[in-house]
Length: 427
Image 1 (cartoon, helix red, strand yellow):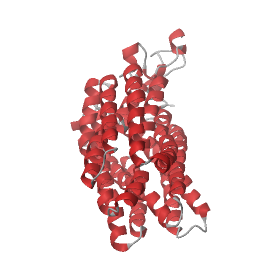
Image 2 (tube, one colour; image 1 turned 30 degrees about the vertical axis):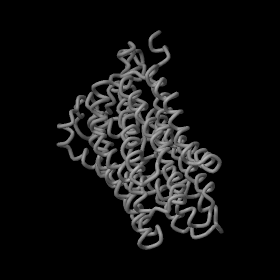
Image 3 (cartoon, one colour; image 1 turned 135 degrees about the vertical axis):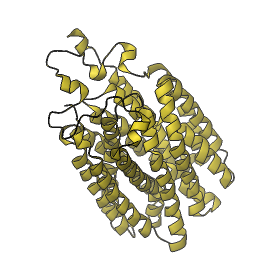
Image 4 (cartoon, one colour; image 1 turned 180 degrees about the vertical axis):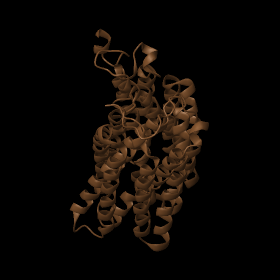
């Protein structure tokens, strides 16, 4: 009983992962702020400029399986500091951009690999090793770092750009990553509870009041045979659930990355200031954090699919608000977009990660996650490019935003077909 009362180090892992995603996704999803600044300075086309983000998504797609393999093999204390160092180098290089190919190389390749190495896949596969009963909640807390990072960094970066220029903003970010992320991940990350003499969820097997079903995550009302506790990448590829999750990732990747690049530009086109656009991006991030924590917590108790559906409906409502914005006469619709789309965006992250871990537990989870999100990156690349392409040829974002609505509906379908309700949840 004394061991069960010890502070569980898993919450330190949650905190460090939160901080890591705060920086990585705050940087990635602030591309729209840098995007507007570069368009104003160089006059590049929107499609070709957004192509740098598309390249970053392609790199993200194909490097994810490498990252998943590396986190499974070497653990976070080696992988994360190296990835953070590479990210800092890419940000420093981005401050010297003078031609569009510089943007493609710095942001599309170096920064993309750095972020991929320390972002979603390795952190989510790591959290699954530390939590079973509270996996949805822990995933939501970690992914809140993404939303709060966007909320905080987008307006701050815009402020720095307004007062010191976008080049200085890149340099400052490089310094912060090098001085904060590198030492923190090297000192405090751990691979699993066993590394420090603890157990998953901080619960010693056989403790009074803890049933075996709570330890392995199985439920008495499971409708299908229990899944293997040691999935491999090969065995997961032979299941329908894996490919339905791939559809979820494709749909979410298309939706989120199109909006990341073009939401701020659309708000500015409607007549709002770049600072207001950055504030809306921050609002999406804030409510993404709220949605991730809240939806992850609730999904631990009532199931992944219904909560994911509610989040998807909120995102649809937000996009409809954005489609109706034509001028500055109805700012409430702008806030409605930020709140509703943020809630839906947050739900997709925490529930998607928890669902993958529910269905495919084991030491190959990093590889499985890394493979499943290849579609996320490729679809994100397409979404970012198509948003700029259609704007350049049609003069509005109406068609791209309609495609986003379709992609949200497909992600909901994929979540229900993956049937995570057949997999047990603790708690």
